[in-house]
Length: 234
Ligand SMILES: [Mg+2]
Image 1 (cartoon, helix red, strand yellow):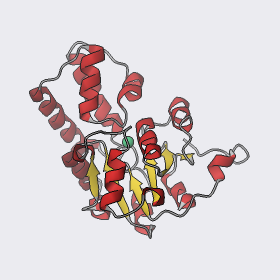
Image 2 (cartoon, rainbow, N blue to C red):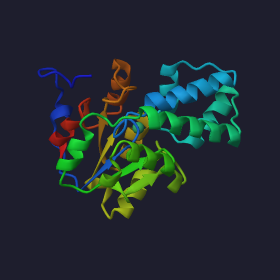
Image 3 (cartoon, protein in one colour):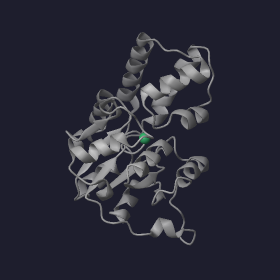
């Protein structure tokens, strides 16, 4: 999706942010284009368990949320209870698909090469999955060991815990952090952490007007679809 066209830009898209001292990247949908793959595996397994959830509804319900939250919603609202063996099977299906099809977000490697600020990753995924995603796409060395997972805190996004944990370990005050996020849950988490946040719509799952509108409704400092645009806000 193109960025907001010139002339249609609203003031909040051009407002200067305080220069951050740390950039916190979400992983799925910001560094790697993983959500279409992850949601394909989720939807297929939910269907095999007897429930049908259209892809767009899957995104609305589960995007940016941890496995714990996802399984809770599936059980409560759809009567789908995955056993630990089911979850392990899904994990293997997903890793197999990642190895075959996972790609980095276009332009992210170039951006990371030119950034002159500390960076870290804070993701709702399990640590093993984050590391595998970054390894497959050649991005691991840009972040390692500064990779933080929802499994390290009690409450996942939209709670602020994970971003606050990342800032604490990186010895940076929340107000000096800039978060880049593709999900409403992530934007809400960053705001609740007292951090600046921008919304990103360049992932394969995020290129719809309704997704963009969902991010804009939460009033991040900007919403854009080309990763290089981040340079404007740092
Ligand atoms: Mg994400």
